[in-house]
Amino acid sequence: MTLIATIKRNETELLHRVAEGDTDAFEWLFRSYHDYLGAVIYQLTSSRVLAEEITQETFIEVWLKRKSLHQIKSFKRFVFVVAKNRMLNALRKKANEQRINQQWVERMDHYQPAEVPEDFFGYYAQLMDEAISQLPTQQQRVFRMNKMARLKQHEIAGILNISVETVKKHMKLAFKSIRTYCSNTMMDQTA
Image 1 (cartoon, rainbow, N blue to C red):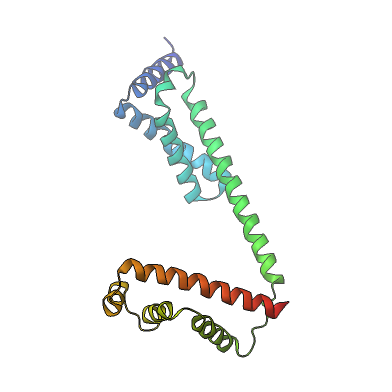
Image 2 (image 1 turned 90 degrees about the vertical axis):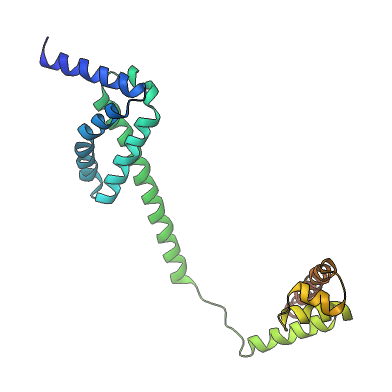
C-alpha cells in the first residue's frame, strides 16, 4: 500500500471516529489543520484576530456537522470550503459595517443642529407647570409628591390614605394628560 493510500485510509478512519463523537480524534484533526488553516486565512485577510476567529468558527462548524463527516472524501477540501465561506461572510460583514460607518460620517458632515432658543429650558418648565396645573386636584397632589418631593408610591398612598393602585392610576392619568397638553400646546404654537 502506498503512503498516500495509507494516509487516506487513516483520515477516513479518523473522520468516522469524529462522526461518532470521539473528541480525541477531533482534537487530532484540529491540531493537524489549525495552524495551516489559520496561516492561509491570515494571508487572505491580513488580520490575526479575524484569522483566529474564522479558524475557531470553522472547527466549531466541523464539530457541529461531525455526523456527516464519514461522507467526506477529502477533509482538507471540506475544511477549506467551510473556512472560505466563513471568511467571505466575515469580509461581507466588515464591508457592510464600513459602508454604514461611512454613511454615518457623511450624514454627520452635513448635519446642522437646530438652534436652541435662549430660554429653552425656561419655556419647557413653564409648559410643564401649566400642564400640571390643568390636572384634577388629587392627580396634581399625587404627581407633585412623586416627581417633585420624590416620594415612593406606597408613601404617597399612606399620606393620602389611598391605595397604591389608586396612586398608580393617578400617575398614569397625569402623564397622559401632561403629554396631551404639551403636545397640543406645541402644535398650536408651530401652526
